[in-house]
Length: 587
Image 1 (cartoon, rainbow, N blue to C red):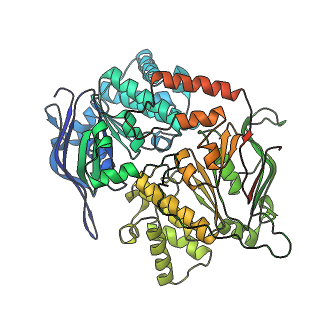
Image 2: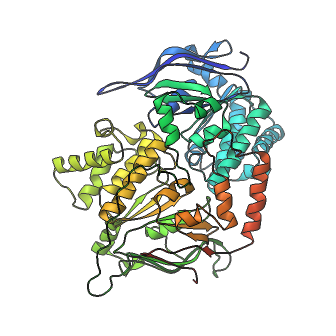
Image 3: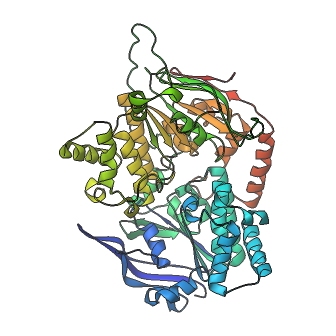
C-alpha cells in the first residue's frame, strides 16, 4: 500500500539477569495511508516498545529479534543505521510522550525545527528555513513569534504542539504519537488533538496513536489495537471494540474508565473512613492553615506588575479529621503553585502557611525534618523525580535511613517490598534496576511507593496518575484513599482529571488563573457544575463512547471564546462545605 506501514511477526526482547523479557512477542498489524490506528494497554504491555521498534530506536540491550517493518517496499528492520536515519522525520516521524523533556532547553524553538530540515535537506537559505518553520508552526496553531522563544517560555500545551510541528515539518508518510497528551488538562488536550488530527489530514499521513486513555481513543482513532504482555489480544474498528468487546482484558480496560455519574465507583470496594478521634482538652491546631496566601511572579523592584499565579487564599484542614481535597483546573491555573507552597518549596508573596500551628517559613533543624517527613510529595513528572544514577532499591532506601524508619538491610528490604506491592509493582522485577529502565507508568507508581513508606500526615499529590493507564490509576488512587480511610492521612490531590477527582475527593476546589471559581463536594461541583469554567472543563472530557461528540474545530474555537469571557470575571461559587475543611472566600 502506498505510504502505508505493514508490521509482520515483530518481536523485541530485553535480556536481563532474571531471563529474557519478551516486550513485544510476535505481533502483526498494518495501517493504511490517511487512517488512524490506536494502541492501548497497561504499562509494560508493549505499546511504547512497539512505537520505538517502528522508529528503530530500541536501546541496548533490547533488540528486534524477529519480524519485519515495511514502509512501502523498504524493510526498516534490515536497514543500516544510516539508512534508517535518512527516513526518520522525512518518511516516518515520532511525537514523544513528554514534551517538557523532549525539547532542548538552550535552543530557540525555530532552531530546533530547522535542525531536522537541515539534517535531511542540507543547508538552506535563511529565508527558506524561516518560511518552513513559520509554515510548520502555523499548521499547529502557533504564531511565527514562537520560533524565537525558548521551551521554558511556553505552556505545556504549546510545547506539545511544538513537538508536533517538529514531527510534521517534512510532511512524513507515517506519524507515531506516543501518549502526546498524557500530562495535559482536558481543554488543552482537546486543542492539541484537534491540531494533530487536522495536520494529519492535511498532509495525508498515517497516524499511530499510543495511549492509555480509552476515552481519547474512542473519540479519535479509526481502529483500535489492544495489547497485553507484548501480544495483541484484540483489534477492530473503534465502534465495534467499544460496543461489543470480545476479550476480557478489553472489557476490563473499558470498565476501568471513571465517569461522573452516580454509578459504582471505578475504585471498586473502598473501606469505610475511620471515625475522627474525639477531641480532648484544648482544640488542636489545624494540620495545615493558609492565611491570606498569594503568589505573584515577575514583579519589578518596587513590587509592581507581575503574574498572579495564586490570588489570596485562606483555608484550614483539621488535624483530627482526614480529608482528600482536590484542586482542579487547567495548566496555569495555579494548582502546582499551591502544591509547592504547601510543600514549603515556594515561599508565598503574601500570607502565612502553618503546619500543626507552626509557620513553615520559620522551621529549622528537627522541626524542619519532622515537616519533611510529615508532608510528602508525589510529583507530576516521573522522569525528573529520580536520580538517574541510583538504582531503585537505593532510591527507596535513602528516605528510610534518613528518617530512621528502618536501619537493618532486612527491614529496609521488607519495607521496599511492601511499598512496591501496595502500588502494583513486582519488587523482584523493579528493585535492582535503574529508573530509566522503567516505563513512565512504573516510575509514577514508584513515586507513590516512596511517599507511602514514610507514613506522612499529609500527601501533596501533583498529578500522580496523569501518565498511568486506567486500571493502574484505580490501583494508585485506591492506595491513596486507603491511607486516608484507615490511617487518617490527608491528601491534597492536584489534578486536571475531574473524573478521578469526583470519585476520590471529599472536597473539590476549581482554580482558574489563581482564583477560586467553584468549590464544594464532588457531587455538587463536578456532578452538577454551576460556574461556566467548571462546565467547560466537564464538556472537554473525552468519553469512552464513539457516538458521543467530543471535539471539532468549532469546539476548539468555542472553548477559546468561552475562556476569554470567563477571564473577565472573578466570580466564586461556594456550593457546600464539609467538616474538617474550612475555605474562607472572603480573603
